View 1: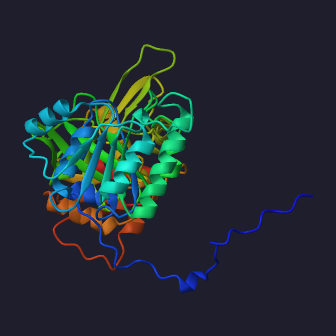
View 2: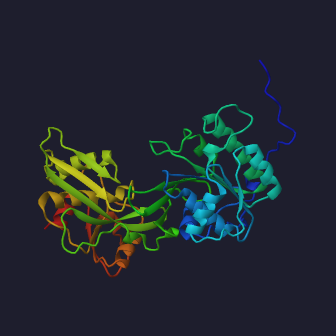
View 3: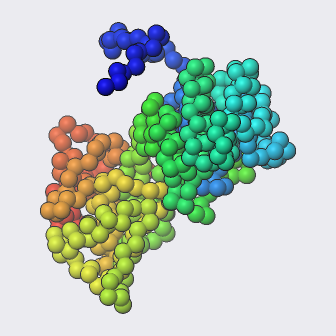
Amino acid sequence: MERRRAAEPGSSMRLLKDVSPHDSVTRVSTGLVELDRVLGGGVVPGAVILIGGDPGVGKSTLLLQVAAEISSNMPLLYVSGEESAQQISLRAKRLGLDGGETQLLFETCVERVLEIATQVKPAVLVIDSIQTVYSEVLQSAPGAVGQLREATSQLVRFAKDFDTAVFLVGHVTKEGIIAGPRVLEHMVDTVLYFENDSGSRYRVIRAVKNRFGAVNEIGLFAMVNEGLKEVSNPSAIFISRHEGDVTGSVITVTREGSRPMLVEIQALVDNSNLGNPRRVTVGLEYNRLAMLLAVLHRHGGCVISNHDVFVNAVGGLRLSETAVDLAMLVAVVSSLRGIPVARDLVIFGEVGLAGEIRPVFNGEERLREAIKHGYRRAILPSANLTKKMKIDGIETVSVDRLDRAIAAVFP
C-alpha cells in the first residue's frame, strides 16, 4: 500500500488553548448601519462576502454606495466585468456619490486582477460579478462551475494572505439560489441574499451564512432615487394601518436575527368550488399552513375542508419562525367567521400537533416591542408568562391550548 505523503515542512500543530483569538481586530464600517448589522458589526479584514439577488434588485447600487464610503478612509478597488466606466459614473451621479477615492478596474481575468490588486494593496476588493471572471488555468467559459470554483479559490486565498476584504456579486438561478450550484456558498465566509417582493420598493438583505456574526440577521432598505436608504423603523413596513376593523388581519411579533419586529398576517377564507380546495401562502411555509389547518380542524373546532385558504405576510418578508403559528390560525378563524380581531391586540405562540400552545424565545422582548408601537393587549403562551417577567403597559392573556386561545380572541 502506498504510504501517505509526509507533512510539508511549513506545517505545524498547536494546541487550541494556546491560540488566542484576534480580539483586537477592527471591523470596517460600510457606512450603512443596516448592512453592518447583517455582517455582524462591519467588515472583517480578510473576509470573503458573497452577495446574491435577482437582476435589478440593487446589488451593484449597494456596493457602489459602500465603495464610496469606505474608499474615503482606505484604499478600495472596484473590479467591474459587466459595466463600462461611463455606466458606473452615471450611476454614481444619479446616487449623488462623488466616488471618494474608489479605484476602478475593468478586467475579467482573475490572474490579472490579483496581479494589480497585489500592487495596489486595497483594504477592500469588489468583484462585480464573479460569473464574468475567468482563470487562464481552465479552458471553459466564464460562469462555468469549474471557472467559478477556480476564480473564487484564488480570490479567497488572496483575501487571507493580504487581509483584504472581498465582496463578490453573484447571479441567481430561476430557483433563487446563487448560480454555481452552491459551490460559492461553501467557499466564502459570508453569504447575503436580497429578498424583495416583486414591485415593492423595500429590500431585505438576509445573512444565510456568516462566520463572523449571526445567521438569519436581516437589514432593511428602501430603494429610492438616491439609492438604498436604511429603514429606521422596520415594524412600520409590515403593518397596514386600516381605517376600520378588518377581518382576517392579525398582528404578531416575530424575531428576525437579533431584533423583534411587528408583522401583519392576513388570511382570506372563501368557499371553494373545487374538489381539492386551494391553500396558498405568500411569505409563509405552505406545508406548515397545511399542518396547522389540520390542527385547527381537530382541536379548534373549525371546519375548513370545503374552503380555499390564502395567507399572506404583509410587506414581502419571508417568515419561517414558528412563533407566528397562533397568529396565522387566528387570522384564518377571523376570516372564516367574519369577525375582526381587536386592533390593539398582538398574538404570538407556536402551535403543536396536539393543539397545545408552546412557548417561544424572547417573549419579554417581543412584548416590549409591541408596547413601543402602541399595542395594549397580548395573547401569548402560558410558559412565556413567568413570575419574573415584569412588564407594565400591556395586558397579557396566557393560553396553553388552541381552543382557549380562540375563545380568548372571539369570546
